[in-house]
Image (cartoon, rainbow over all chains, first blue to last red; front, side, top):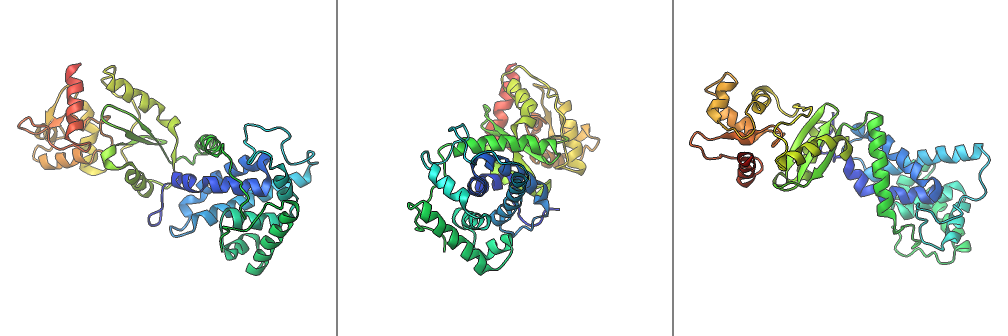
Length: 167
Length: 196
């Protein structure tokens, strides 16, 4: 049934839970991130026995998170959105970086593809070829979307630098 | 980009999300192996259960990470830290170590052993609290008096130490013999039961 030396699922939660949470926050905003995280890991646990033992678990999890996030985005577009995606009050959800409301608005304002490319490259550290596999389209297109996303973020959020980003 | 998407509450958030995953996975029938760790007078014990029952008790010296990897390969990789399913086992062990329980009343899953070993392990609970038997007596008990060495192997590979009382089986000369948790743990359990 299980192939090779696949680690217990709990190890995936320990090793990649934080990254998937940050990816979900960037793609969806803090408000919907936790639901997307839960849906992602539940779906991953269901499919885990069929994952090849040598697969890149993080890229696999980000791919699932991407699909779950698209479901959320589609559902949002079907219904009248509440005013603003940022929770008005600081809550127990822990809005990352107090006072960085500008950043969250800047991220939320990016076109979907750019926001996703920024999340998968700069937060999850995936290579552009892997991101192309998730978004569809070419590796160059994935690279361009991430670059455009960063440029747009810099316009509204000058504090952003690309230091320490993965190659 | 050095934009910081971390939050000081990340650890708390992830703990909460882990609990939520545990409940959802169980509700959807995906929790093939649930586990937790508990403290005991013989060191931290790993407890693991399938939907059928308690499937593994492991001493610290067995290396809990290795035990979990083995469960992932032998049973299912859907292994999750999920203390809820182990509540009853944890409570009964606590009562046992506190001298308030002599018999475990837990559903057991013996799927990690087979054949003669499983037969021996099924009969071990017939040795009552505070009593001991020799390997030879246990061989006779399961109807195969010559299989003394095989009984030794069955005890040494018991996946459910403490709960399935292989610690009550001694050498013919009265010395404790080997034990999966080490000789100190075996002696501690025998002393605990003798004091009651």
